[in-house]
Image 1 (cartoon, helix red, strand yellow):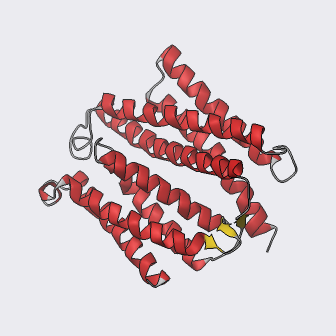
Image 2 (tube, rainbow, N blue to C red; image 1 turned 90 degrees about the horizontal axis):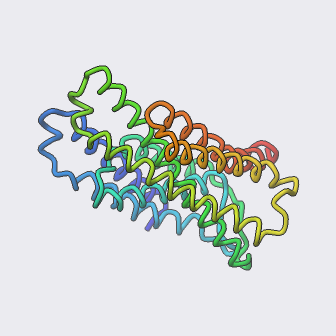
Length: 269
């Protein structure tokens, strides 16, 4: 199938899914008449088209294309897959209101700014495992960040006695909070494995082109570890949990995308 057509179908499905979920969340009548799984299934169709697009764009004779926008698209696809599969059994689809349009945007950017940054076909399997676990960790913690924002809005509205509309459509506060820390806990475990595998299997994580990525990743690990400890020890929640989650996510994204942006888009221009 034509690459542009597949991209258009993936974007259309993602945006359509986001609109359906938003209608169910914000509309009093029209949206509520739509079955819950309508938006999820539309999103899953987008995931399938996106997977085809990634296969076409990242498969390279010399290896796997991990350009800046290609990697962004891959992480967006991973987030969408995790989110929509989780939504089949848990009430997390409302995160898609933010994440689905962002996934569509990564596809558009990848199409508009094609580039080549190849992970060689003969690269060690240990490096491939490290990259895969890192992507899963980034994706889960990205989802946790959006969940934290949604949770903070919900907490603020309930504290100021505005429980209608948007808040009424969300799961109970305790459920939202439990989901948040499940995501952060699993993301932290995966990030720990990614860092450990990097130290064990990669030659030197403190070489010139990796040192900033390594230091920032460790800093993000410390932030999320502190948050989980604070949650267990002091019961941190609400605005404090939001601040720590977003801080850790920003540092983690700088670790990965900051280095790729500088190396591929700034220094190479």
